Image (cartoon, rainbow, N blue to C red; front, top):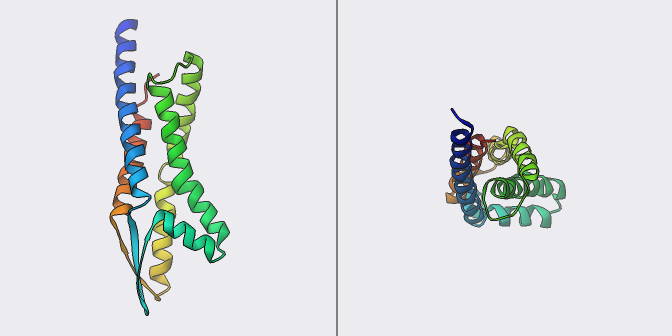
Length: 160
């Protein structure tokens, strides 16, 4: 393969990564406000989006858990996708060196991509194990998982 062909291959791969990162960002933005779970307890059913769940945790004094969920399930995926978009799209006039650094950060971040899904899964398991509630996932959970999968796919399709 010639240098020119290698560059064209990398450009095409990065266009795919940029498209996936953008789709992930949009899906994640929608997922944050969709019903994430419905919790059935003795006095009825409570429905939470990821954002309303975080607000509820903060209001009840569970600041650490709220902070962890904001960090791993909101900020981390949004920032990771922003880095992917900056590194792979032509929207920003960045030097080659800067793009390579962003590529490196995105490649390292892929190791932690599923951590945000893990945080949500742990929350559901804890509630189910306690026996005090039943938990049903909602459309927000499905969209959230799709967004994280697209982000991971975008990261893995990066070309130097």
